[in-house]
Length: 426
Ligand code: ADP
Ligand code: MG
Image (tube, rainbow, N blue to C red; front, side, top):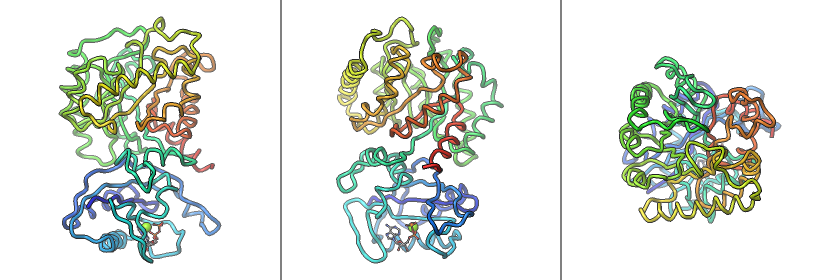
């Protein structure tokens, strides 16, 4: 039987409590953890009975499990034992809790007793449940609604935060910043602590005017860093998952052994052979719309193209690509679509694209935006990309609110912290 369990903690060392809870669940007889969601930080619910010390934020995640011979009631009892063992205080309803384990959903099963309701009563109202469920299964259907849409329809949908790590001497905003293994390790350490979900490692700059590099040079830059990433990951918990930012078949092929969670191909499938690699792996695939890579300021949509026509154009492009993917029998649940802000769009078109981002949610595909520090901001921000973070964070808040599933940003800690403040405010 396949089930989904929610795990939350807002007391004590929340990260290690979640880690211990996962270990305890994994120990349950005839039970297997199939998949883990990302971990989200979220405000505690506050009402008139809440005490100040309880309003500490929660860490929440969910897991997908398969079990044998356990009734829903027995599973609930086992989860309650784990809660008790890891020190949940029996206390007033709204008190902070060391650990909360909820049975969210059981495939093809519904339960309604005094002690247990499945699907969980609050499943559709809680962003800290809908977002992890989206991570586990994009199109899990709960009483007629799909998880992807459930998260988007809430007042505060939760995005996956992807931090950008460029191993390039010439990237547009942070070229040369990650000098050597120590600064990479510092970045990993800091991002693990602040809950960055994915680290997008790339070695080729795609800024306007960048010189393409050979796959060989790309791998020369990437491989040692990926090795460092792997050893860091094996000795730390909560490490951001690996995303590989490459458009080269050879490079992707040589990096699959590092088990990236996503392949971020900004060329939008310019090399169809990449699909064979995706098919034979577990990776999700980011499909980004572009008119040219590297970005070419002379190759943009016609300036006078209306937003509507630009959207239509991008959607047609997407349809054609999805057809190719479908032909390879790759599930569309593994595809993340990025409309490619700044790639082939004039600054105004990029702004309009952001404003009308919801138009791209009509497909059952996860949506990603990479707006951070890009040059469409020059009309209202500094000329130097690295001085555009305040504006980038502001845009992130709007995109998160609109229900964009992935936000790819520089300095992700700034975005995540600001977003947490935003979540506390309404
Ligand atoms: P919550 O998880 O809603 O914040 P509790 O963990 O204190 O609150 O749960 C209160 C009670 O809800 C539990 O004692 C349990 O019997 C009951 N309950 C009903 N349905 C579920 C479910 N699907 N998962 C977990 N507990 C449930
Ligand atoms: Mg509970």
